[in-house]
Length: 288
Ligand code: PMP
Image 1: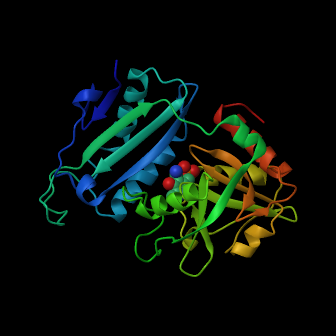
Image 2: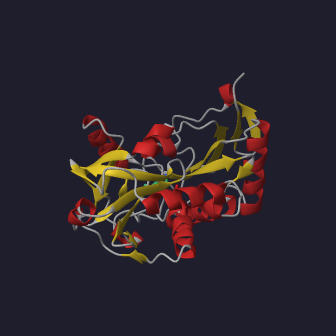
């Protein structure tokens, strides 16, 4: 039995969840999306994700086909209809059906798609041992071209960096911006720890304003850790004491090697461990 997928204004069978080949989401990557976790039937930070989705849509002048409240209801219904306990929701809005030309203003209504499914996670071993990454030669989209805050359907920039990672037999790559400063990983934000201080690049360096990033900020501050948004160079990554990525799917994952340089003692460090544990507790609704 297939999934129930939300299409526009109702749930349909997966086999009937079809989109036109003239949809500009397909023709031009013209649309926006969110990836959301479900922990123990609770949809994690749903309102924050919906807010970011609406802001992404506004930035690209995409008219949302549904109000925020109705959309929250649709996400909840889709999750419940598929019996998701721990899983992942992909919520996207395309520009809709248009012509073969670019003009988005003549597209019909934006199409809303909500898929709630199980999630393919990194193996637990990768969290214990830590992950290796490489620096991508692909430069992050210029922030004056496509604002990095917009979570658009066009991920070619990240995909090209991901190919570089896979070519090097590692799961992830770090992208740098046009000035050579660290922007982010292909679908995660970057953090380092140096001399007990936690650093992450500012959004203006070319990062998506990650929801996990924001939570980790708060959790670190609760632990009385100093958190600083600062431009980071490749050198900063090479010589840091700890290095980790944050994101909806990966949560908090330690990085132990970049471009052949070992980070710290080659294992995820104590602050990474602490923040991963605190994030887990927060996500599962437990007090730390
Ligand atoms: N950067 C990019 C490019 C992303 O796609 C994502 C989301 N997967 C993130 C960072 C992390 O954001 P969040 O914590 O909201 O998932």
